[in-house]
Image 1 (cartoon, rainbow, N blue to C red):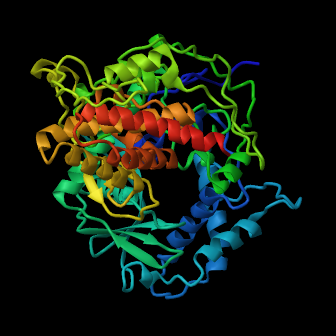
Image 2 (cartoon, helix red, strand yellow):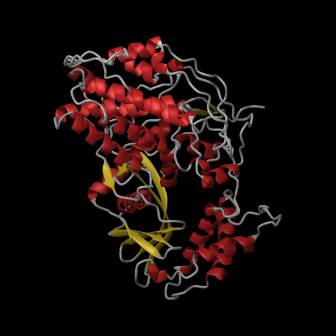
Image 3 (cartoon, rainbow, N blue to C red):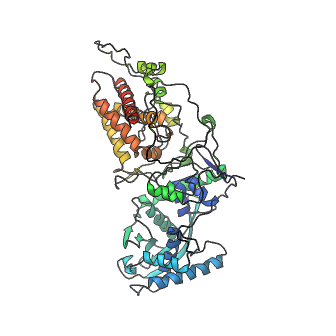
Length: 571
């Protein structure tokens, strides 16, 4: 059986290369920015329609609103009737185009029934139940354009789109079904459409995302700064998508929506944790072990570069390839600055299977009793002799020749601690200005498009590490940054040693103290990062004040690793 998509540790490659797009839509780039491999899969894997499929019901809802605004004086339209009319209209448009999906497909439900036009019309009408046209703008609509085809360009990139509704008051409306997102990605779509309208000589003064199920509308910031931020981000995404198509390889960007990807059960990077995500993954058309989607081990030396950040204001020529912190970099090898590489298994990763009573992990030997462990402790100035040491340790000279040992860390701010000005110029990755927003603490810290949720667990965890670094530096801000790198590496390495690679993935650039921001903040959101940072912080507070920072962090990292490993073996 011929493969459809082949996976390696860091990329997915379709057997049949995709054709480079001549023009880019917002939905295309939005999917690509969420995960390049997922976007590619939408072109190579047939989508399975679900019983509550949001794309099907959303399409019918848009058709209903398209018909409703033709009679704006009707305050409360007959939504069930319009749903049936919309399905017929959409089918007629599909026949005229000669391509497209059925707006009301027939699928078999779990109870054995087949869906029909009535089933989908009812589902769509329920989404608009109670919605009035005046809810969109707070007054009676004055239609100037409905479902208008848009086309234009920015910085040489061609864009296309379809405007849902344009009012005579120079206001754009984009109809939205489903929940109101915690980030501003929907606003980016209207900013793109505003640009396309203006480029074609149509005035747009304001824009709103209208969430019909919630009878709510959200204004979109159309300031010059936000317009430029969005458009530059979309241009960069389009260029990277074109590059991936040309190379025929697509990186992974795992996250909370992996369960909704058609590759959820075969992608080696899939992050399917919540019960809802697992249920969605179970409903995907591709299941674990499908021979059409093989996994091939790629040696570290030959592996491709990781997925790069999609930043809004980074010049394409400035993008650099970050080194990878691999599984060979255990806590001991980081502490000693080297170590023997650990053999990497060539077996295909298996999907995690939850069991009610998992077997207790086998006790592991104390790594600090080995020759390498003793060497690491000696390098950190930790006395392995059990007899009390009554002499005062000599002051440690600043280490200017080696990178700080311990575990991987990440300063998010764009000021790397350079060993020389020449190295800084050659290796510092380009950063765009970050945009800070406050959402729920349980929302992701990294929201995409260089946007950070400052209430997210990962951001708060990083701030805690920074506070510890400032405390250890006695308020010296120049010394706080390298100490932050030291602490961050320690947190990652503790987790990697205790929980393994699956729970603590490789972070590009972490070994050099310049981790890839999106992946680093995503990992800091996890409970593994929380536990490792908490344990390190507690044990750091117990270290003697008279010792140098390197020794204190090294001893705290060692004790934290041993304590957390002990906690796991006691289960």
